[in-house]
Image 1 (cartoon, rainbow, N blue to C red):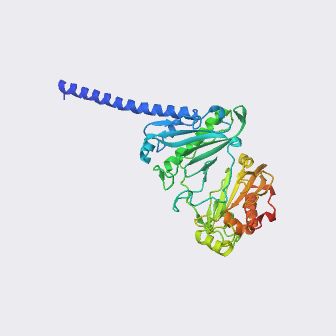
Image 2 (cartoon, rainbow, N blue to C red):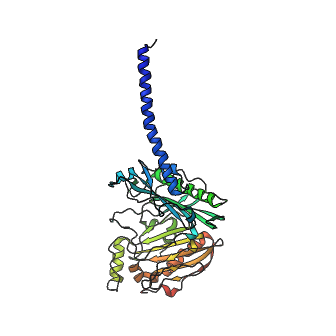
Length: 416
């Protein structure tokens, strides 16, 4: 059938109008994406994959970056560590900021040897109520897996990459690190206080790509493999001590602490031979903590009742590889000067319930730390000399460690 000329002209004109209209909108969207990519590349020195940042849930609308020396990557400072901070109007609108612009993403990278020291918990820390109501979710970090030295937290992913042959800022690069994370875990873009499955996977890809780009910049021979396609959700803690597994499996059924004052909960992670910071926390539930205080602590100077969940705890860390040479313990109440936990040595922070031991595993140093909460340490530290020893011995068995150096038994005397 032949289409009448006037109908054909009408259809052509309509197609042209639709095309022009589409090009206009498409051009605006293309310009917005190109502008966003430029903002990310400019802020992050081209090291963070801009396209993957734009795939994150809060990356909608207009994307900008912090315009300052702090919050933008300075290529000359990569050895000591740099970061970039990215904003989006969608994140601002959904969180209700008046400007409609919100800091939602931070990318960071540098050399492990030059980064901020690794520090275990302080005896006064709140482990189950981190600055929020008692119902706050607590998610212990988990290994990334996939043959990568990496950790997944409730807000992001951090990875490490050995680089013995590379250089940054004219100095040996050593082990490199890179991280990608959301600014906070209680944003409307998270699920029950942790990243969504989509954003976990994207964050892992960003961290791995950033590390590999930094390795290329430093002239490193090695690269990390591709990030896992499906990064599992974190397991909420605490979990019952009777079900302890992974990093706390050594405590389950050990009978090390008996009676009504025994830790009955744990914060634990999966084990991974590539982990540079392996953590296990023994926690007393509110009921058990109060029972210990009533039996042992009531009346002792400066031993306060445990008024929050998780106030009585004993936390264990093992730092390995490059991290082992960069561990600082919280200083004593008198001096507040940080104490270096030196590999090959062992001891206790004067006047504080914080100890460290060391070992050598596969020819590399490891540092093991134990922090007890202040009140619990005052009344139960004498029991924890053998508990700490059991923890370190388990680490030595699992990782074929030798040359264990352990604090003196006297350092675990109660009341110190």
